[in-house]
Amino acid sequence: MISRRQLLEHAKSQGATDIHICANTPIHFRIGGKLVPVTKEKLSPQQSRDLALELLTDEQRKLLEERLDYDLMLADESGRYRVNVGYFDGHVGATIRILPTQLRAIKELLLPDTVRDLAHRRKGLVLITGATSQGKTTTLAAMIDEVNATQEKHVITIEDPIEYVHVNKLGIVRQREIGKDTQNFHTGLRAALRQDPDVIAIGEMRDYETIKIALTASETGVLVLSTLHVISIDKILERLLSYAPGGDEEQLRFLLAESLQGIIHQELVPTVDGKQRVACEILVITSAAKNIIRRKDGFFLRSVIETGKKHGMVTMEESITGLLEQKVITEGVAKSILANYR
Image 1 (spheres, one colour):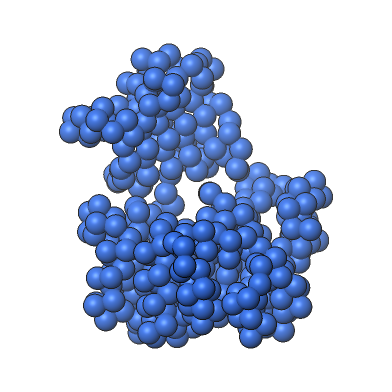
Image 2 (spheres, rainbow, N blue to C red):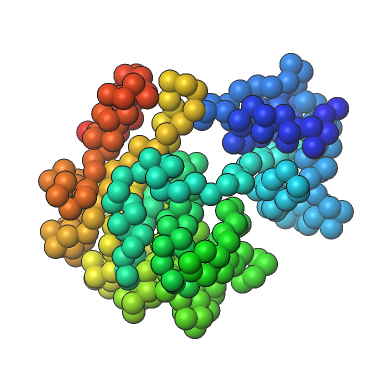
């Protein structure tokens, strides 16, 4: 039976981002965005259980039995890993995310210059949006690094878990992990406001309390960077307003219109060399965008992006077309992505 160390080393040598340990199926790696079986034999339920439980301490195994799910961070001399162990149809399995060991700068990610410009805003809210596993955390880390490397500012991050570790450069970056350094996002955010921040980075906006405090902070002269799961910029208002309790929608619209500086919506697309690149569309908040946020449906934000090139806005079609012209992606990939933006 393969050991934990062997499994992790093999996954990294293959360039995998995730490992799936599941009963009655081979071990799978996610490579270049696709699931690939890497063992000939299927794991028996006992093998899946043994391999998953090898990731946990005795105390963590007891908590798994109580909760049926357990999340943890693993770190060793070779890297850092985000792990979920849980029950699936009565059998124990695990999913392991291999976290990058090196920060990548905005330039390395080949992101538009507007991303750097948004990182240099003095105050307000900047959102990085997209579906799960589309590189949002990597872009957030790159923006934090941009601030850290170029400005004498105090950055506080609130993360679950900490994926990229920052070292102080021109600025100071203090990282807090949910469950270890603070109870949850909104309590950590409330505390951050009393810690003399210039920039607050929130790993993910998950509830109304966090959203409201973040918007309030951005109004008081702090730059707030965060991620949000949403399938397109069209749906951003719908998603954010869905968190608001009855009667608070109008207030949330007002806060968004006043505080939002920009939205970077991205997708990781498979490239011809078997890797992945970020394609993105960017909305920079103008007076027209503010009026839409206050009064209309988010669908109308699409027209703002399409006519906002002079403000640094980028459409997904422009981003994808650029990758296609550079022969980085295939026509099939381009068509499949753009089908969701027309």
